[in-house]
Image 1 (cartoon, rainbow, N blue to C red):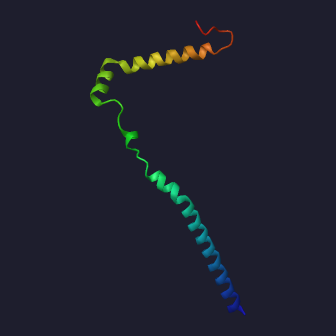
Image 2 (tube, one colour):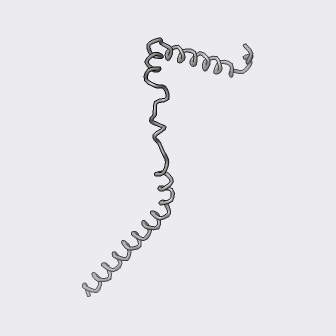
Image 3 (spheres, rainbow, N blue to C red):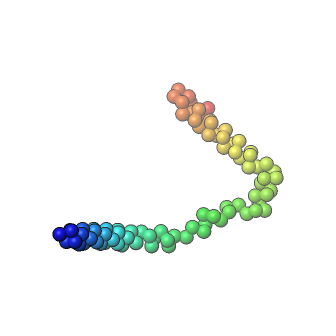
Amino acid sequence: MSSILSAIYCWLQDFYYGLHDLGLSIWDSVLSPADAMLSSLDVSALSAPLIPDAYAWVLGATGLAPALAIIATAMLTRFVLQTIPFVRWGS
């Protein structure tokens, strides 16, 4: 009797793992087109420098980068302060 129950248990376990593998293969086949589309994207432009090294050195030596940061911060501060009610946009 024990061997029959053991055989049933082994069969049920194999059946469960077979269903699990079938589910994984179906899920993999559903996701394979998305995987193919994502793998075909070219991401080399994301790592390319926008400013060449020679120009970046000149900008750094002249202090233009901090100046642009100060100007951008001042403009952002002005915009934020002008969003306060009862403050004129034209000032």
